[in-house]
Image 1: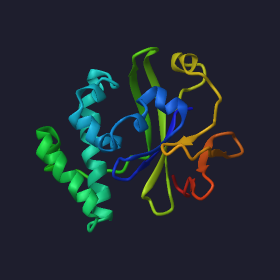
Image 2 (image 1 turned 30 degrees about the vertical axis):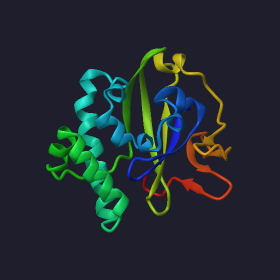
Image 3 (image 1 turned 45 degrees about the horizontal axis):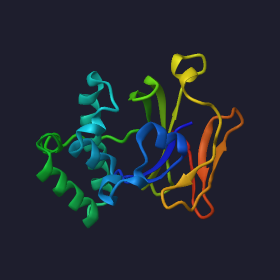
Image 4 (image 1 turned 120 degrees about the horizontal axis):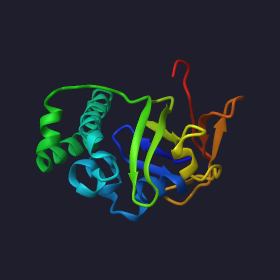
Length: 193
């Protein structure tokens, strides 16, 4: 199950090996490129992960999600700096930012163009930390689907980007991922998600 912990501003904080295989290893890139919004709007290769017909939607969602984080943290200089750098570097981001769209991603279906296995269609679930400043993003393939056959199953070992893991997935009675627990941090599904 590909899973990663992402800050509300888009910084990848931790990835399991499956997430690294799907998205690329954030820890292998310079720190500025750990941010998924920055990469999407400044690195053309980052867009190649998505089918061409899905890229417009992905581009719209990222600034809207970032705007929601900016609304929650109006005095966050680091977040304001990220927006400022993105606006200066990407005309597309700047135009989308100016639409003032606000959205918080919770769940949905995403398609990925993996360079080895090809097109994957995965359910995406987002679990929020109690402060809503970190998210556990989990991608799962529906059993019986073509994507399910392409992704190795099992392997819930999770290592954060600093290499200080592992952590473990928390699962509900049905086996569905309900959170992630590190030695000092616990991310769980909040009621109503």
